[in-house]
Length: 74
Image (cartoon, rainbow, N blue to C red):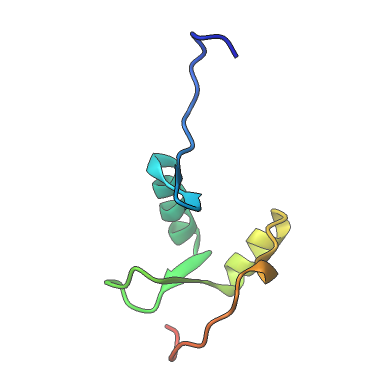
């Protein structure tokens, strides 16, 4: 890549995707119903059944994420 090449940044924050791209992906996943929160004020999300299907089709190995027990989901 030469010095004058324009790129769209994909920033890493510690061990995850951050920056504007991370925010755009988060909002897109919420809008598509792939992830949801048990409470609208909650910063903790879970992968929905629709999300499991979509991420699996994309080749994302969700078995690498440890499952957690939560209360009743909306």
